[in-house]
Length: 370
Image (cartoon, rainbow, N blue to C red; front, side, top):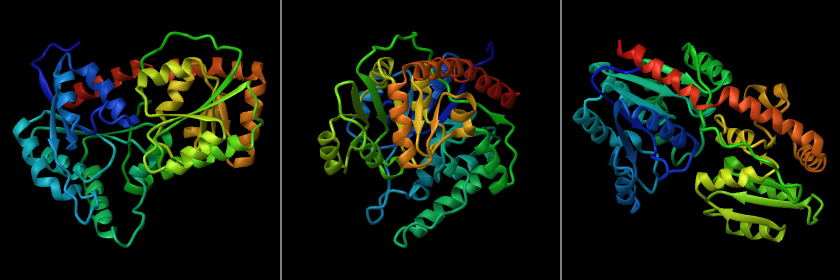
């Protein structure tokens, strides 16, 4: 498909698997696709001990670091690293910058692309990326607002904006007055099909434990469900700062497995029956797609991107805790309904979230490179 001289792309995002978030994984899969024809650089805001190991293991990529500036212990100080970032970008002299998510680095990428022969592609990672400024804490309001202004500057100057959902596209228009003509679903490799064990019925919760994910609500839900040997409950994800909740979860007979590699997550989903999500918000949860590909319906408390769970009957959008418990129990005990949902879920994911979606990204690069 590509016959011209290799061009350079900078990815401004965390590097997977150093960061095992959904946005990082999506960027990593895209980079794996493009590296055959492009020189790929990752600019990573990190100063961890693991980076040398990561660089050796993934030596086909150029991984460049920016050490975070901390002011009074606060980490959201991207704009104070702008000179360092701009110098790194200038030294690479890229043809494209791909930024996934929103932080102050976006303004630096936009400024560079405005003054050089370089196209900025911004990929929305979360609905919060395209919502108005929210006042959180008086101690951090200055840094938060500076970051918001930098993000807005970058959004307004991106050459191409990609949304994950139609809702994100609408929010971009509503809050920034910008039209996004490109909605591309997240992409995942297609796993082998799976046959579920009859028992135990395995119900999983997957996320790094933090307030927006509300892990305590899954524990609360399980505490109210019948406790018997036919049900197995598992929680995955980094649990830093949640020692008390881990103990409470284990007291409710929930297996707390911590953070595990994505390959192990997929192996677990292949033998699981339900995924429960209790997040306040999501971009487009990669765990939803991973679950659907493994015939696992999703029971979600608050999140239903573009009403997909309801529209395609591949899970439940519960909306409140009482209904969440009822939905989990119903799908855990109604084997025919659960299997029917699982079959539709896999078919939906294969149609909408396969690696074929990467072809649209290739087309965007070709169009911007003309």
